[in-house]
Length: 268
Image (cartoon, rainbow, N blue to C red; front, side, top):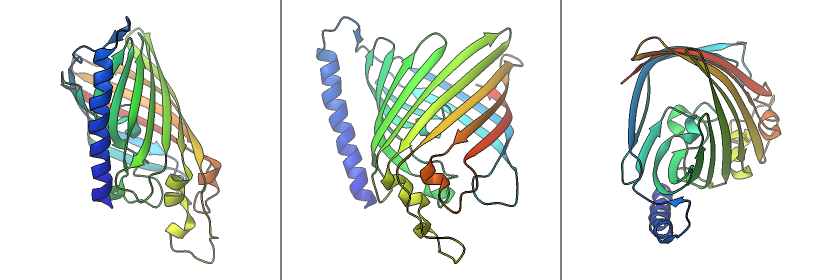
C-alpha cells in the first residue's frame, strides 16, 4: 500500500513539475515571474519549554514539554527545490518544488506532515505524510498561505486536507510581535481514521463512535527579541478549537487546547 502511494506521489510530482513549469515559462503575462528561484538558507537551534492543556481525558489540568534541542531550518536551491522544517506549524513543513512565481505569490508542490503526531490514536512514529500543493503570498508585514493535499502517502485513506493561515507582524521598538489565525479542514476519511472509537479497544465506558469531516481553528500571539546578533528570545501563547467531529469522541475532554511556550534560539 505504501509503495503504491509513493509511486503515485512521484508520478504526480513529476507531472506537475513538467506541465506547470512549461506553462510558466511559456506565459506572456506581464506580472508573471518564471525566472530562477531565489535561493535561501537559515538554521536556528534552540531550547525551551511548553505548557498546554491536554485534549484527551486526563487527571492533569496542564502538561509540560521541554525541547532540547529544537532545530528549525529552511533551505531552497536555485532550481526551486526546498526543505522547510520548524516554522509555520508542522503542516507547512516538508519537501517540495517551487514551480511557479506570480508577483508576490509562490506556488509549490509539497510533501508535508498531515495530522500532528500528538493527535489521539497515533504514536509519534505514526506521523502522516501527505502530497499536495501550497500557495503563499508575501507582503511587507504579512504572509498568507494555503495548502491543499488530496493524497495520503502512508495512510490507508487518502481523504482531503485544506488549510489556510494568515500571519501578521508588528515591530515595536526592538520587539517583533506576530499574530497567526488559521483554519484546517479534514475530510471524513482522515478524521474517522484517527478519531473513531473503533480505532481503540472499546470498553463498557465508551460508546462506539464514527467521526465525520470537520474544521479546526488555530490562533497564536507571539513575540521575539534579539538578545544579540546571534541569540533570540521567543515566547508565544495560542488556542486551538477542534471541530464537533473530534469533540464528540468520548475520549476527548475539551473543545480546544491552550498552550504557552518560551525559548531561546541561536541563529546560524
